[in-house]
Image (cartoon, rainbow, N blue to C red; front, side):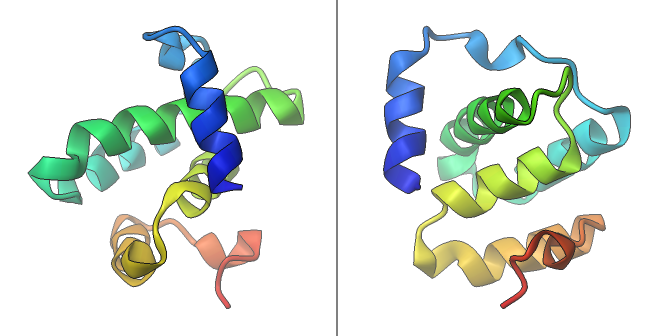
Length: 104
């Protein structure tokens, strides 16, 4: 799955991460998530998550990015070493990733 996201990101022209509107609540939570990521990784993570979330929204046939898309994007592109800190960040901002099957 990570490879699929990387391939997708390489195919899309820069700036394509703004094709879909965001559900208001999740956009605010996404900003909080990004602010909690280390400065060194912040820009890369923001673009990768936004673009992957768009891909997942499009796959669902949605006209906007929703919480499920952000959660799926985060879990599909995060190295194993960062999964536990990422879960803490999601908990901190009030996103229940468990309801999407990522609580195991």
